[in-house]
Length: 141
Length: 102
Ligand SMILES: [Zn+2]
Image 1 (tube, rainbow over the protein chains, first blue to last red):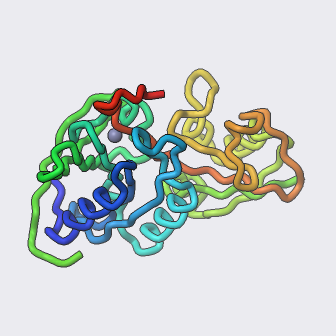
Image 2: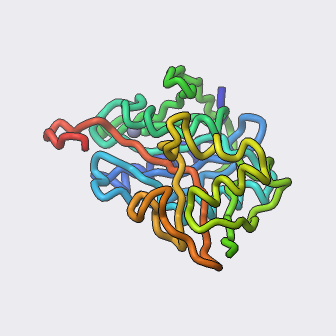
């Protein structure tokens, strides 16, 4: 289970909507299973409508920031513009689970325009996918 | 002949917390071997059993992705910077409009 505040959830959904029809991406950090910071990153994939590739400069900056702040990297998020909130075969193949065994893959689907959906998954190194519950708690961004 | 290696946060447990280390080698592969020699276990974090770079690992020589250079055979010169970073990539499989995934 992972805890997210309502404003954090809204921020991820707003990021996904702003980026539409391109996929967007970012990193979530915090501690003890509670997200504290939503770090937006840039998608530099050449075909951003169906792919995301996080800007390496953002990866370097954000992972250092998290480490310097003594926080944990809790997850990576990206959006799916037209498909469900479930890891695609590409998401699974490229997942850095070996380096981040506890990080969750958050996917924000905009398939239903009116009802964007955020779900989180644990992707094992062998590709096995297991959903993690997201609990929405009181708090700020 | 020494290059500056930028170590990602998750691999700093191998380097005693150092975020930048120096290593000798005139190709990326040679530097990885030098790092393995100094920090045992480092190589398998970067390379799979087949000896190729793991899909989620990106290596940059002076900000250029080695996949667009000469991969592990990319030559290195004195003072070059080798950055090791996780790759974060993926994507929805396809759109209703029918863009095929590549
Ligand atoms: Zn995806």
